[in-house]
Image 1 (tube, rainbow, N blue to C red):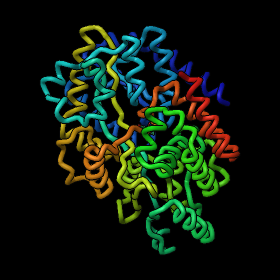
Image 2 (image 1 turned 180 degrees about the vertical axis):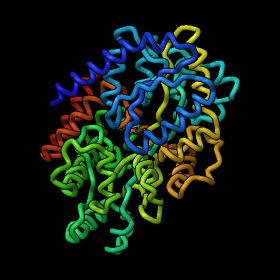
Image 3 (image 1 turned 60 degrees about the vertical axis):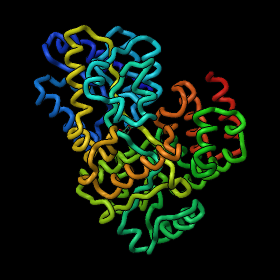
Image 4 (image 1 turned 135 degrees about the vertical axis):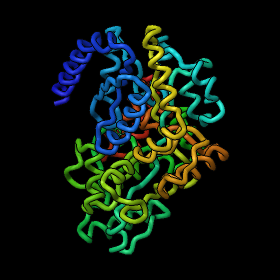
Length: 419
Ligand code: GAL
């Protein structure tokens, strides 16, 4: 199955390589590779595309389906190896570093200086956008991963309130199961398992521990009893899902909450984009709250567009694209639809819903408290090679349900071997 998927990806890739020449020949075009193909994601992408088209450019859409972007990153690698990168690619965290280190990225320094990006983009994002002082990537949003999305009708019916501790979450799940609902909607794909691990680690050990373990990669923290507790939480979460969770796409899991089949989903706020698309309203139809034990910390995942080195003619398109992405009113419109918050600190939040407003308030506080931390699952905590090795351990554990102590040891070894 995996191989079939890969074959499909490679043949799609060959197709886009073949059509590339034609697109490049067109004046004033911008080719962007991305993985925004769910209902909410596509709606948000349309806001961006319309904006670029309004500025007189042809939008060459290169979508590679697959939540979390694993497939898109594979396609990009192959295109780059074939000497055929797009103008820009959706990138997360350390992927920008990797391509920059390989000398493959250009920059949009002139636009950035003219528009004063240095002053408005939060520092933790700039760490990835700017490589050796150059703006090599353009941030379009700030997502947060330590959220839980809940069906309000189920919560009302069972008289539930957002859990304050992990034990409360476990107790609630029993009640939900008894009432005939699935406590946790989840899609068993490795990046989704990793997404819930983000929150489990933060909840088990707090922000300092999360940083020591998943960002500083301190072997003591990685191999600690606290890490075992994070795996124990994963084991309990595993008990809250339905029997058909394997391989399910994240947006189908969101749909289970939407359709009142499941009570909750632990997911980044791109899930909010799905609720929005389905006309469900925050605090009326669904609830948003932090995974218990993680309130006060902000695990971020910012989508950026990595800017590849291209010829001068294409670079003009890149500059227009970059300016469109950073435009204040665009960032407002786009992020309302996407479920995220703007990647700049000076956008008015009045038109965002309660969850969006909370996210911005929490992020500004986390910036002050030093608790705005990069998401492990989404490439903002550790280099991609280490991440891949760690995700493997997490997903194997989630599926086998074996000993948290063994998984902790395997995590230490996986990270050590990836260096
Ligand atoms: C994330 C990405 C989000 C969202 C999600 C699901 O990695 O940053 O924008 O699209 O994947 O596809």
